[in-house]
Length: 423
Image 1: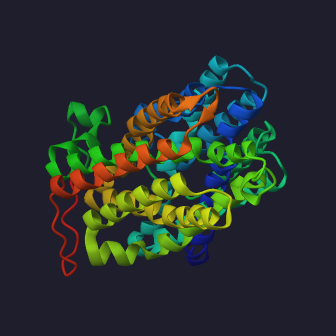
Image 2: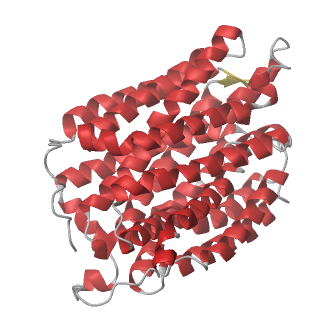
């Protein structure tokens, strides 16, 4: 039994590696494939990427409820990834925007809940062996980022960025993870001690968090930052590919291997993830999220003025570095914050709600509006990327200012977290 418990950390690392390898195989390159190979418009690409937002509006919460109430989380996790494998295989054969939208929606409805479920499985497994989630989860989560990087390098070095083979790689990885997840510890469903109200029977316990003004504001800005994240996922790779229009840059590293350059963002994530425990304890969630918003402003501004020239490449590289702070200090810290604030009986539901706000409403709005922004600042297919990125930078700056004055949170590093919010 002791050996079984000691092995949990490497087992979770493998799970998270595969979880994000699947996403990394297509998330940042599918837009370039659709624009350059299939001839989709910016709005078409935005619609396809909005599928994960649509799915995340309901699916993480619903699947989280199932994992809380009826079926062990790792079993639900396996079923979701099996569906993903089938949908991604189908998507690889599609060249019509409308059909691509529906198939990727099917994939998203299965994949989006697995993000929250992977957190739930990790937190519950660590707690079962008496390990503190704040200290031990971030170093484990790093392996998800490593998986994302490995997928990006695989797709880029094999020259699959403009090919449907990226989807086949993701499908095969989903099948492997579906089988592997059946070997993970079983997370028991909630039994006994749970209120018998009608709301509880429907599994809507996590919505009690909106009664807390601080949590309501937190979830609102989680949604608005989710829109920012969607923008860079959708159009970062097509932006770098577009430098091929300039004969001076056509053979540059930026154009030939854009995913490898973008993977520096995930490498930066690895470093920033490891700093999360320190920053959360030292500064608290408000200051950490403000740091994230400022980093998003820098991310887009550096994109606006970067190019494959010597100086421009430095700006692009700096944009990749600040991405680690922008993403981790919002996404990972937010997940840990929610975990600390809620009762264990609604853990999966609360994580599902967080994912719904970030990758649901926020991602949908970000995908749709960013697609229209790209098309608006395009003339005869030529995109004014400088203006496009500055518009997004301005949006992130406005968010930071409003968040500073609206989120009421006083952090005292000498005190432990307040009692979790129960259903």
